[in-house]
Image (cartoon, rainbow, N blue to C red; front, side):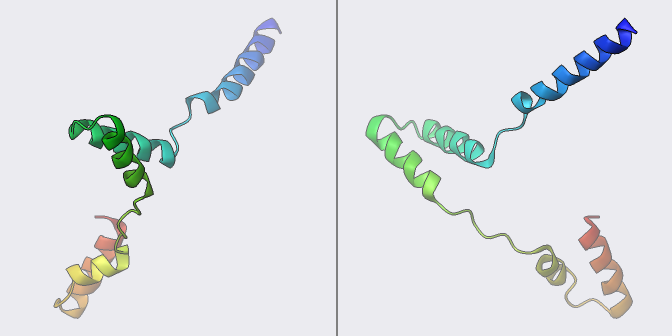
Length: 93
């Protein structure tokens, strides 16, 4: 009985601590990336601060949808060949 109680308590602690080990959020990742880029350029002081601020404000490049990308890759193929290639592309194969 004591073992069961100890296991339940241990499980509860593990569940409660899991948010502490959660992955960084996207804003933190972007901040790290901008700081790394500023370091690579050896920027310091106000120049570094201005670079990081503009980097953080920059919008990410639009990604082409998977369907559009697969259509471009299979352009010019015959019907059955294109159908199979489209299917493989959409599955990520």
